[in-house]
Length: 231
Image (cartoon, rainbow, N blue to C red; front, side, top):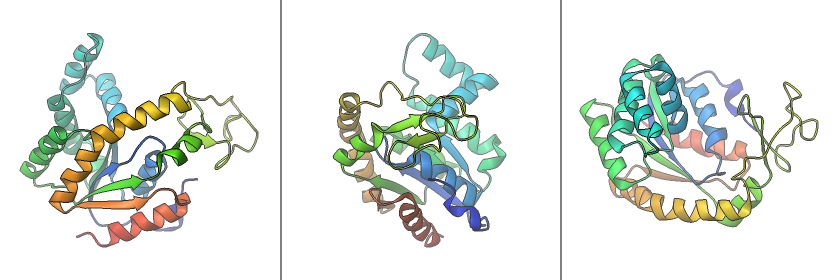
């Protein structure tokens, strides 16, 4: 499903974007493609937290303390974690894709404040838009190779051998939350929380919507067209 930009030389422009979209909309497919083509860092909140905790950075230690106590990592820690990456991660030199943050308007405001003070304001908030009913059929067919994170789909992107990873031949699994009932709850929560974030970026004039019901290659073409118009 991925690798659409492989035939294209990396772009030299900077890119600073937030990628919005419900679970299953294709952020996991498109994020790495954008990273590859534009040589920017792909900052997914979960990965970022785990990496900071493993590395024992100042923010990683602060986050670990909260998580070990069963709490939710604060907006301040998350924004500082992003700042830490932008300042010290060489992959972020030419820009970034933020995936999974911000999830609330308060987070969006704090993120903007930090980025503007660092003279790296957001250029766009791109939302992958798709009907909930389509997402349910997408997600419930999703298969994951746990060790690498490679994902497949029973219908849209099946492995060469049913139930086996293409590279290692190891068994694929379905995430426990990839069932219709759980997904519908996750989507309700997503819409309630994230719609105001999309509205916030619309008011700022940087929101862009992409129809994520299309084939991944068509979604990629739409994204490329958006990025081509950026300064």
